Amino acid sequence: MALCSKYLALFLIHTCLLLSLCSAADPFVSYDFEVSYITASPLGVPQQVIAINGKFPGPTINVTTNNNVAINVRNKLDDNLLIHWSGIQQRRSSWQDGLPGTNCPIPPKWNWTYQFQVKDQIGSFFYFPPLHMQRASGGFGSFIINNRAIIPIPFDTPHGDVVILIGDWYKRNHTALRKALDAGKDLGMPDGVLINGKGPYQYNATLVPDGIDYETIEVQPGKTYRLRVHNVGTSTSLNFRIQNHNLLLAESEGSYTVQQNYTSLDIHVGQSYSFLVTMDQNASTDYYIVASARFVNESQWKRVTGVGILHYTNSKGKAKGPLPEAPNDEFDKTFSMNQARSIRWNVSASGARPNPQGSFRYGSINVTDVYVLKNKPLVKINGKRRATLSGISFVNPATPIRLADQFKVKGVYKLDFPNKPLTGSSKMETSVINGTYRGFMEVILQNNDTKMQSYHLSGYAVFVVGMDYGEWTENSRGTYNKWDGIARSTVQVYPGAWTAILVSLDNVGVWNLRTENLDSWYLGQETYVRIVNPEETNKTELPIPDNALFCGALSKFQKPQDISFAVSITGNRSKLFFTLLMAVCALMSLFG
Image 1 (cartoon, rainbow, N blue to C red):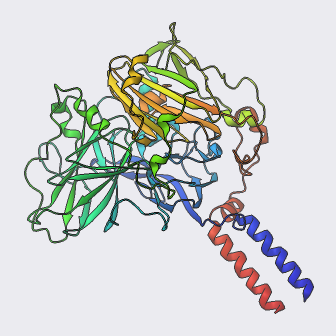
Image 2 (image 1 turned 60 degrees about the horizontal axis):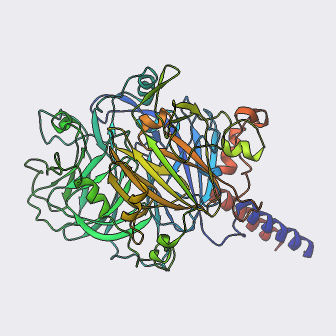
Image 3 (image 1 turned 30 degrees about the vertical axis):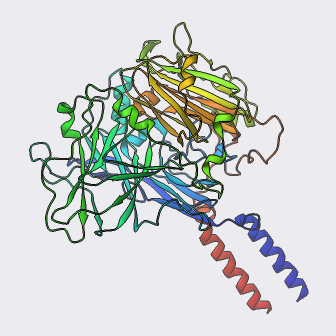
């Protein structure tokens, strides 16, 4: 009996080690994603979209700070696939970031399990497939990280939590859009704006045809709801508003904001916001929810406006009247920028930890590296139209950068991205920024194009300290906000303007710095920041995962996948744990 007890104890220990439960007190949350094509008609015309578990948009991932998360992704597309967790900082593990600079793609009919911890984060984010412009066909969904119970949120608990995914949409799928760009063409005006994967409510019979399914959000009168709004579109900035309702801004991409009321807010591609909306209107009618294009010729773009319905449970009729107006700032270039500047960090609120957000005094840290990154209109390189950043059009390597480092593969990339824009001809390179571990980097994003851009840095929240029209100069630092500039992962840069960000490089790995506009991204407007701890230790970066995929120069290391085994072992750890637990109980019963 003693021998049985000994073996039983060993079995339990190994079970715990397998499930990574003994080494961490934080809960384990698992999801299964089956990514496939389905036929849907969001704008009234059947088209191919990318669904997750048969749904478009995909399911919301809902976790709590410090949870360990496992997401098993089964690729049922006819194309390679990655899933990127936009804004999730992946502390110490760029291996799980889901971008071509860090991960080999999941081949068709294969599955792969992402495993990471949402360490010291809260807030509203989203996920999407980053390869080959696939996001333009769907595959996206919301990613919510809730506060731990012991950390108060800086507002009363809302009655409900509502996800709203907005974005411009084409009736052509991502493959057709990619072919247009490869042929040197622009994408042109989108065919519509979707709200939660659905087309517009027929507020105008001339502009909106019959038979389109639209989004309805049902609410109870007098209650306050948290609306998490994400712009998951291709390339269009959108103004978000709800007829007769104020939007009290409360959070943006993991940072609680100073709470301010807006009648509408510009949400740029890749950005996420949380609003508190109180249902304080009478219920004589429903109300319009609107997402309309910004910085375009409005008269031509009216037909692509996204319209949903806010429905009170005691509503007495349909929404009526014209749509609430967008900001009228045709002759005021600074309106939207001043609105963006008004978004401030709530320095007294707790974030993921009990200490106030403002306890990290970013304004008093000495800058160690400065990069001025400039984008310009498309240029021709080797006869092809390309987008550039500081004169370099990025070429994704066949062997991911992080994997090349791990196995010391030479010649995959150059660690020579310039800290100032090139003065000569533009070139196509796999050129990477050499980040200084524990350095403090200042990045100036200069937009010398006529189109709005938004930029995202993976693995980090950046402090948005300044933005203005014209060319950035050394004197521009005198305008920086060094106290309560918002910390976020995606920031807009207005045409003919600059935006300055500060970032503390404490997260070891290889992290993507890119435009979120899919057309410019696809054509090369990106780079990576490589951050290496000179002291080799697992404390600052986790080891390469056991299930790492291999490609490019390392393809010879990739073994064929036994899908049935992979699904049973990695598909759902909670099921595996339950199965093993039942086996333990049976053994105890047998020997007890």
